[in-house]
Length: 466
Image (spheres, rainbow, N blue to C red):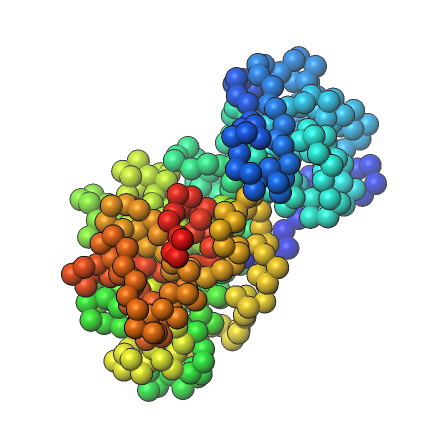
């Protein structure tokens, strides 16, 4: 995710201007927890990140409580960073409590002053018991926290909420209790899209979703080249193409196709376009209108419903907070076929396609450029069975088993006429792309994604071929 520069902590010599004006931290952290030890972690995690530190039990000492107050609270309220803060941070560094690094990590995400960032990184290294590289401090620190599964300190959400909502007040309805691991939530570098429904023609300082986009016939879409990548969706015999060029700019579309309402997120970081049905929901639930929050979880965009302020697990389509989270709302998926425009329109000549204007005059190519050297946001450990950015076709079978199909191998096999079957489903070619269908030909809601993303949100996923 890319966006305007946001500076929350700006420093000059010994004085720091801190925009974050509210940070409450419980002085009585409790919890007899211990990080997973090397024997419990997969070998590939220990090989990449080393052995995790132990997490001490019990309450903080009064001396450490005072240090936390001075370093994390007083410094922000008083907008200063001086000798008292340096001394307090030194005491925290000697505490041997790796849980504190989660708060340090959250602060580092918004720190622009290099000197202060270096100081925080050194403290994080001390608490984690490992000398970390002197580059991308925040990313490296957070990767270790995730990979080692370092527990969060008690009252962590309250602390984190204070930090993040001081930066963007619109996040106040986002950071609430729910079925979500708040340790993994980070800032994606953009602001929240909180525009009301069907007002997406208005500009915003955010990644701008599109509601009810205008479409044209394939014949009238002369602006698209045959080689351009599109995300194809079919509902009740109606076909529509969502050009990647548009989706890389919008990342979220609320649409209607084949008489059904859809919410279509595209996470450029995960290489995943998905299509969720947002109608025919349980009684009393209003149609979710999906927007980009500006937040990430392990490099996957965090989407939310502007109607109820409920946060969704974007990759799983599950509501995890708010009214919809309390009702355990699970959205069903329609398949998304990733292919090229020329093949899609030839196979489905009645298709419609979004108008060029929704690209906002931009022609980004994140998929083939920015992600070349791996995820640009922390993800922690990645299942090593495939390269992190290998394309897979993901689907969940009737038994609830997630399965990832190595796309290039599956495509080659299908083009040779071979059959690919797993439990109740099989893969078929569709306009140059791949989708999964049931034994009765029903759509099973498959989509393409990067391996690192699918394996994170489906950690027990089967992989084809094995």
